[in-house]
Length: 294
Image (cartoon, rainbow, N blue to C red; front, side):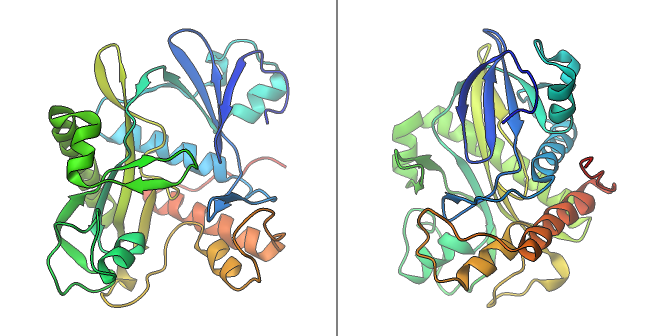
C-alpha cells in the first residue's frame, strides 16, 4: 500500500496495481512491486518492478500515435498527499481519465507460443481457429492475429472465438478494436525489432471517455507482452523471455500445486527476476534504469 498519507478513496486492488478515485473524471493508478505467477501473488515483492512497468507504459504512451488515458505522472498533480506518499508515487503512478472499460482484452499474436501453441498442438481452438496446419512452436505467423479474450469471475482469461467476440461488443466495435490493436502491435513490433527484440504477443485494454475509444491500463510492458531476444529466436524450441521467466522456471522445480500459499522466494530468484525486468526497460527505452532509493 501507499507509504504516507493519500487522502483518496481506494476503489480496488489488482494483482499488481492499486486504483484510487481522484474525482468524477480522474483515477490514480499505482503500480506496486507485487508479482504473480499461475494467478497466485507471491509473498515477496520484486524491487522496482512497479517503476519498470509504469516507466515502460509511459514510454509507449509518448511514442504511440493513439488516444490514451494518461494525464500526468507527476505526484504534485495528486491532491491530498504528504511528502512520503509523493516520494512513493514518483515513477509508479499514472493519473488517468476515468472511463467506461470495454469488457474485452484485445490480444495480438505474431508468433505461435504459450497457451496458443498448446491449443494448436491439441487440435485447435478459439485463438488458432484461422491458422494453417503445419506450424511449429515459436513459429512466426503468416500475419499477426487478433485473438480477444474476456475475464471470467475467477479472474482467468477466457479466449473468445471471433463469433463470441462479435456478440460481446458488436461488429463495428469488434472491427475498430481489431484495427487499433493490430496498428499498435505493428508499431511496437517494428520499434522493438530495431532494438534487437521480438514482440511475440501482447494484450491491450480499451475504454470509452468523453465518447472516444482510448487505450487504457498498461501497454507493451513485460507483464502484458511476450518479448524475446531476436538473436535467440528459432522455430521448434522454447524461447527466453524478458519477463518473470526466472520466477516461473524456479517455481516449476518446486513441489508446489500452484495454489496459495506460494513457496517463499530465495533472494537469487528475486534478483534475477528484477534484472530481467530492468533489462527489458533499458533495451526498449535506450536509457539506464534509475533504481528506487533505499
